[in-house]
Image 1 (cartoon, rainbow, N blue to C red):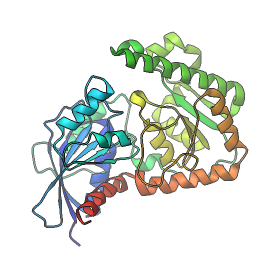
Image 2: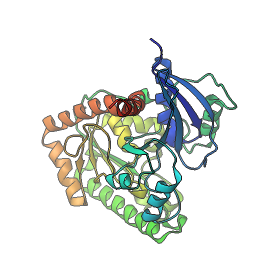
Image 3: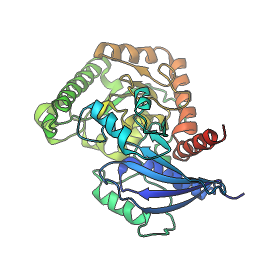
Image 4: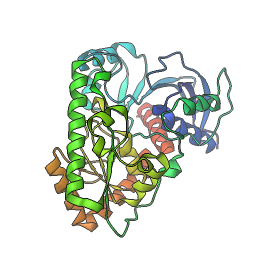
Length: 353
């Protein structure tokens, strides 16, 4: 069978886009799409992937954008200024946004439909591609790895794990602090200060309440050394290989809201590992059958976090159910090739209504 979809990618080297590249490359490998690539002329600091799509033998083409920005932050400005920028600066037919909420639909560019892209996490694309133009994915991936703050990148299969609980239920929460002095907007400074304090409080409460059942702390950086040195996690825990291994060894994993109110990468990593998740409320929507109490518990305070942990500790059936729900959701909506295929099928169905 000939490929249904024909996709031309405008390539930008970005960790935020790795999951998307992995999905496109795997769909090409499965002969579901044909794939070509050219270098993007867009802003290399903004993880926005432009794709020109053709379906079957149609002469018509559609312009798609895949947006993996942490929030509504296309430009340096207020939320309202960003939404107006979005409305006036994207000439496309379909826009798939990681940080999606219903408000953004009101600001959709003319003749453009906006949909949630879904959860993301940083993985290394597994396959290379035969280039037809001036750059190759392989070359830019090497540059990306050299520039990365991580020592190495990992394939999606490294994160994946079946929904099998460990005999002893343990709790895992590894996070970081952000230096408020590294940003200029007063709202961003306030966000970082509140985020830092909340994360510190949660770690302290978990350590006190659960003792050896709790594994976690803060990643080491200059700001954390100066402000919360006693909470820094051992270096072997923050090593990427050990972090992935540790995630799978803990039945319950905790995550908090990221910068720009985003859903952090850890949420996607926990989903890939089929863990039971406790999270601050998610401010952005994910596609498909994904919801609070089914895929995760939410908390708004340290007391509520402790309460939700006990709720899972005391109900192993519910914990197992959540782990299976996350396994199913990952394989249908978050696994990279299915995340991309779902977006392409969305366009297909929209055009064949």
